[in-house]
Length: 428
Image 1 (cartoon, one colour):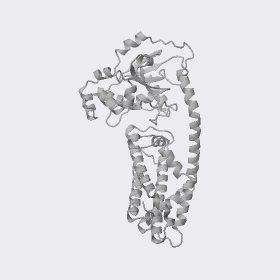
Image 2 (cartoon, one colour):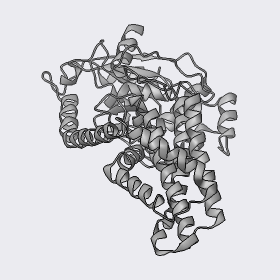
Image 3 (cartoon, one colour):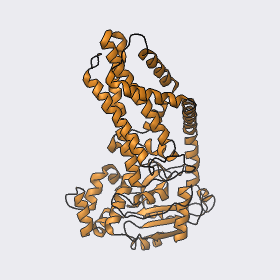
């Protein structure tokens, strides 16, 4: 890009700035996504709301990055006369638009702590990298960014400088708004960002220890090691009665991880069956119609699963100690495919059959396969999809949304995972 700014560059700044403003207008018009006031407690967004937030986030970042591309005009000091003034105008207006609307977005998103979790998630299909929101906050709630703003302000007000008339209104509005943020709020936001970064660094340092302890607790019995009340004969008998999509609740006595969990059932899994079992069970006109609409040439669920999640599908075919995988569950190793013999190596178990169509169950399995390989959520935070606990896998696989009726499981307190454990126990 040449150092001197063109009329096209001026138009681009105005278009991208308008795009950022439109994104914030959308946020303001949807209080269900971006609350107008600070929330006192965490909340959970459903799948449709998350998709709307991520779509807006992607659009906002697209405009922000487009303004970044105009940063070459910051070399305006090498120019003279009208060319210098025009290049300064473009660079200044682009910077102000980024700075102003980034702070507007951060202020809107920070009213709901759960939004930061969603915005920081990696979404490959949208091209969103992990940690994008944290990077946005670090970039714009930073003393260096404030210093850059001051430098631009000084350059724009230097004797003899004439800013582009077309950019004047936007520059004036954005500059005024930024100064407004600085009156008792900008410093606080910068300080809050620094404290948040410190907390995040501290969490990163502690997390491996936390994970190790939680994993050890989940794998450790304090009595009757290597012996369970459910026998292999009983597992073989129940296998004949299970159907893909069934939810199983399991309890293993004398495990340290049972401590502190409410209800009788501390663990939940999804029965997926073997490929042959799924082919037989989902040999259904409605399932075939749906699978065909999703691109499965033979209209079969197996073709759809293997095409949509090839790596997960391969993992789901690997035998475990000579037994075929028939179960998906989130445990200390992460979201995994396990055999029924492993999953029911327990002392108590119950199978729950969702009162849903085979198509709904097929859609739930497709979602579940998409979560395979994700780490276990040792924070029990249902607001994020990047790591899951056992009940979260069940909840999110069957979560209503995008044309799916699913299973509506209400959340009853701030600790969503424990609430779901309790609900499952009560429903039994």
